[in-house]
Length: 478
Image 1 (cartoon, helix red, strand yellow):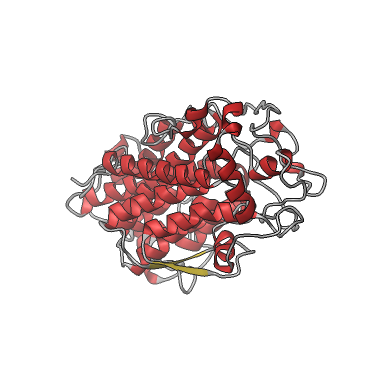
Image 2 (tube, rainbow, N blue to C red):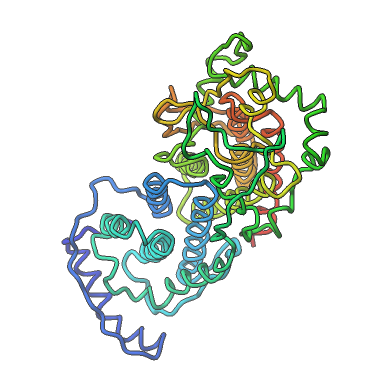
């Protein structure tokens, strides 16, 4: 539906309609008489607003992620809470005014009280739900930003009374926050590692200093694998068998398979040739792909954010409507959230917390000068501060691709997507299938020098299994 511009006749008429109806319907819905407070609009809507409210509020989330930084797991959890709540809110609107819904809600769709559909009601149900979910997640630091984005969308203050808060929005927000309370996402325990060869350790070296990864205790989100999933039974439900095949670091390092993995990472992921690694086995296109998918540093929208942006670009190209967008974004976000939990289970909750290639190559005596291609904004070679096995990028990418190919009923769909990674030499890349994009995302980490090939392979398998479970059990077609 078209948005209401602040100060227009339509906007004033809508405000009068809401105030006139408020007392009657609030009394009927709650048994309580409330005073509707109207505040004048403070800002006009932009001349070219994002048409779909699902896209708009996901854009807001990505802007918050760029502002906040941090680990991808919490960001994916926030996206799942946002989009599952939006989907239930949109389902409630359609259940009330559009004759029903075609797929089941995530938690519950409310056929709320009301006698006539209000102006711009679908937009308001979604927007007010999204704003309040994000406020609960980021209100400590981003309240002013969220208020500004609300005013940008509606031309009114978020504190202005809206009857829909009473009849449906508060229920959507409450049921989602209640479902996630106590899910383990606030576990602040730190990692206590070892210096046994093969075990992950901090990757700050004198010639590549990284103050953010100088101690074991700085490992990022070591207990995220124990967070309650959105669809899986546990983070370990689809745990790949590979780490358990060895059981000990000694057996792992003695295996021919491990030695082959180290050599592959050494030649494909080196920043530049050295005396002991004279050849870098990486094409210019692979290096471009490595940076295209990176999004490691704060200030980018992180790996889940890139996949949400890709979802938007593909949904726009294929002309999805608001209800279809709400379902697609909810499925993608739930899969990304559970992928983030599942891959952290592999990294920290299995027998092998595998060290990064730089540790294997340097401390294994192969090449003391070797550095990965990945760099921070200051140009210093760095590594993500957590174990290598399995790859988070690979798991996220496969979970995304798994939902997309199941949602659209085909993997063989051509599309183009973008990146906001500042070091990427290209803004856009083109793919002929979702699986092709996921595989490139996975192997981009080998070309950046921060993962072994089996990290990518196990991540691809894990992510697709997560996606299959999410699609088979959540938001199913009725």
